Image 1: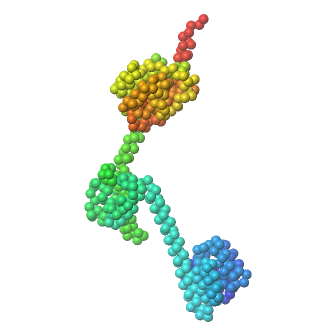
Image 2 (image 1 turned 90 degrees about the vertical axis):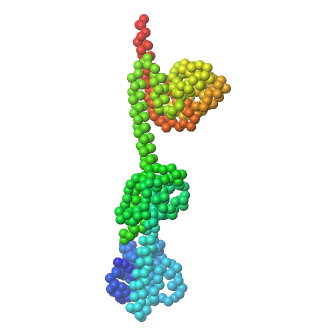
Image 3 (image 1 turned 45 degrees about the horizontal axis):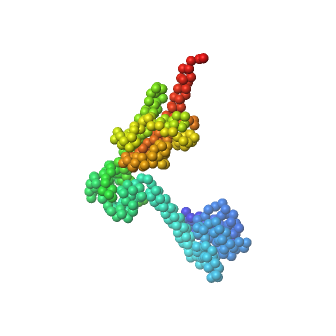
Length: 448
């Protein structure tokens, strides 16, 4: 249905036009005897089109048009007037009118022209709105597909790729969509084989899902879960296919990393409980070094030192490959455990980091500048020494120890958060053990 507002100061014409236009059954006509009345009606009723005379008292047609266009640029506005002045017609059309139709003595023919112009202008505006709606939906759909983290590929009826989103290109190892556009989707799979009759069969099934071995640009392969659906138009006619992929190899790797992380968390929790129950005479620094060695990358060297009076550091435990430890001790000329360094700074609590970070200055820093520079340089040139990370074993301002991990070249620890968590627990345990020793010592002093 098309709802029309007809504005004219001629009541007889309004009634005649209303009767004629509504005969077809697809037009509903409301009438207004003046521009001011039309203003009020437009305030509470939406119209698909507006028909107005040009010359009316109070508010003429061009003023009504400009009033409408200030807030509405789309509703069709038609002049139905006996004005013949060319300048008036041009002014109306330039102000946003859709048609300027003449009144005349041939009433029936002019009403037929008006009815045709109404339907044409309304249908055109509705088509424009539908086109804009569809275009907006398509833009949103394209943006959603492009930004989706799920690999999505669209193929035509022959199985040729017409669109591949960035996630799809990434999973295959391509950078440019033009490298895959136009190629058959079967080219990207090593197995199973997709015979020529696969597409007609898919058209019958509408959807297909299964596992396949996919082939990347560099020739490498990965296992993928594939979901394929037939695209159809509103009439159900097939247009092509859309396929989404899941990299099962990456999923398995991610699941493996998650399971490994969970095992590490469980391991840290168990070791934290064991450390808490360790007797006072137990080798606490050796226990901490063993736990850190289990969490550090293979080939790392672990050095645990105790801090005394916040000024003296003694190496209590060293862990790592025997060949690496032997090479270090050969250069130093003595075993690393038992080495003592007197710190010149006023205290270590202000300079030691509270979580593992890379230590600037390398060997020179972790030996507090007590080894000759030439020796530090030789140690850093050993083939198994890369970055050095470390942290303090501190609790409530008191430093109980220093932890250093000498990483092999290229190694990147992926358990820093677990190491920090364990070190935090160790710091609390060392604080408690120190308090227990002090209490035990006080109780062992005989009264005077």
